[in-house]
Image (cartoon, rainbow, N blue to C red):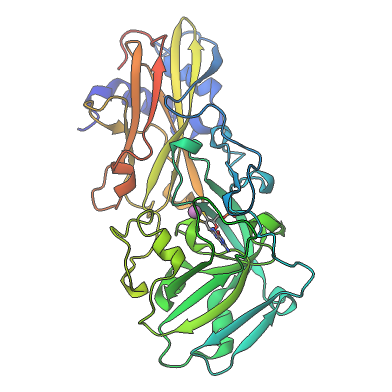
Length: 399
Ligand SMILES: Nc1nc2c(c(=O)[nH]1)N[C@H]1C(S)=C(S)[C@@H](COP(=O)(O)O)O[C@H]1N2
Ligand SMILES: [Mo]
């Protein structure tokens, strides 16, 4: 058994019926973990605070900073809880603000052209008649990193129109193989580190299997200007660079298109290996299965200190493989104690793991998926590993 060193905890968990309950209640369940012997009064659980993640900025901007292409707002992931999983719209991360040259007084139209029988100009009124709920989906910027405390990632409950429905109306010609979706991107100020012009080319199969849609609403409200009002593309499961904002042109193309400047700019961050010339050579910019610790809570249980790691699980296929955790690079991985049910996986899901370090010192929290057939390149590269320093270790008899 892989978790042999953890058999006592395994036993406790089974005998006390913890599991999913730990995620929801917290206090009482933590007290259960410390019960030794299993009978007798339970010690009171007191939450003392949180450990800081090492080598990360203390306070990234949870309010909008800079402007235009360089604008940013980072979502604070540390406060996610079972009843607080959806990102409020005003906290949804921003990467590039509404272009200042976008004229909101002009009626918005999306031109659908290229290799079609019937070129169309779709008005917002046309679009609104087709809008339906699209469910909860996560957006993560391919450039997300510890320098922003991983805050270039958020979830929303979207509404919109399946892209395929609109394409049908324009009657694609048999030669059409792919679709270029382009957004308005005319900023008066150039950016120091982002190119202007935002478009991406998708094959029909990619749009279909992702369930691509043009979003007009998030969390029950119209999109905000910075999130693409009046309309943006959402590619569920793909990186944010594909989720074109302020969509105004959709063009059906053949299979020989050069990659767009946006595809080239994001080639490395979407794991293409190199900047590829032809759009058809790009692999889908999908998000592999990932896991990230979002906070480490410190608790006192009777006379002992306990830590609880809370994290999120997103991307890829979450029906296969379970998360495993370790706290030092040479330690064996162990099963994460409380994992989300695979079926509930939309957006991101929370996991929990109680931990009793024996010694003070620096630790590195790393996760893996126990099924090697699940692609996890970013996770395995240490991208989402986070360091902490423990000053007060846990009690004896625990590993
Ligand atoms: N027109 C346009 N759309 C765009 C971008 C852009 O610069 N221009 N940035 C993309 C990138 S890199 C990301 S991560 C997402 C961010 O969406 P958000 O700001 O709504 O979170 O928008 C994408 N759509
Ligand atoms: Mo991005």
